[in-house]
Structure formats: structure tokens, C-alpha cells
Image 1: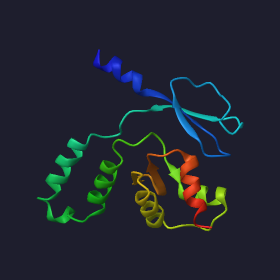
Image 2: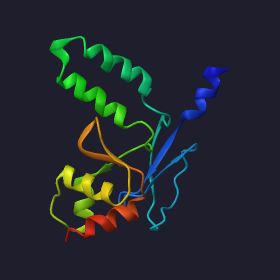
Image 3: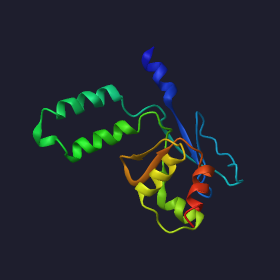
Image 4: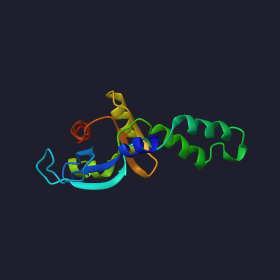
Amino acid sequence: KKADNKLQEIGYLKYCSKCLHRKTSRDNFTELCVCGEKMEVGGPLWLGELSLPSFLNTILNDIENLDYLIGSETEKLIKLVRSEYGFPVGFFDIDKICKLVGVKSISSNVVMNELSSRGYLVTKVHYNSRGIKVNSEIKEIMKIFQSFK
């Protein structure tokens, strides 16, 4: 029964390459985006959490006893994966947003600080050096990027 319940966490990501809007879905039917463009569909993919913070905390506690791993790329990666917990599926590519709104490339830290100062939760992703997860819709993110013009 537990395994059957987990199957409910498999679905699809619908994505608009024009306005970068995205949403998760249980079906893989194409549909029109809020901007009128046809959305692309990715999946099937896992819509649930990628990790458990308690498990990652256990690993980090173990690392504290292994001098050769303290400050290592392994430790940084585990901390980054832990920071992604609770965020929506998918991510936003900073360079794609910059291009879409017509601004020069902005550093990840500047973007994250600006989003954070406006009350959004934001983190880098472990699989794309220019990718972020944020608890905001793309429209709001684009407004913030436009302020860098």
C-alpha cells in the first residue's frame, strides 16, 4: 500500500519556453500556457521530494567525524541538496530569465539576495550552477529581474 501511494508522486512537468511558466500535472496532455503558447511536457518524473533532511543531517553528522570530508565538495553537495527540500519541482535558469527580460547576466548571489530581500525563499540547485528554486511564480521573478535594467 505504501508503494502504491508513492505512485501518486509521479507525474509531468508542463513548461512554456516563451514565458518560462511551469506547472506540474498528473496527465501528459499538451495545453496552452497562460501566455497562449503551447506548453512542452516532460516526464513521467518524480514530483515528490528528492531527499529527506533527516537522512542528509545524519550524513552531515558523520562527515564531522571524518576530517578529510570537512569542507569537501561532498559536504557542499549534501548541504545544497538539503536546502532544496520543500521547494517546487523544477528550477529557473538565471541566464534564460536574463535573456527573456533583456538584461545582462546577473550573478547567482545577487539574484538570490534580491529575491530573499523581497521575502521569497530561494536556493541554488545541485544540478545546474545557474539554476535556482524559488517559491514564486515566474511573473514575479521576471519583474525583479527587470529592475536590474
